[in-house]
Length: 54
Image (spheres, rainbow, N blue to C red):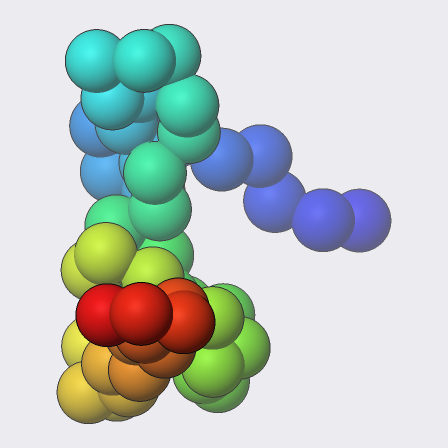
């Protein structure tokens, strides 16, 4: 059975009401999803692609 997430430990809600996972949650999960998460403890940074004309 999967463990329940704990607010304030595994995630928090940002100003827009979105769930943001903490570094502690990512470490418990055990791997990087390579999505550029805000609190990535694995050091992955999403590359920002510039659009045309920029």
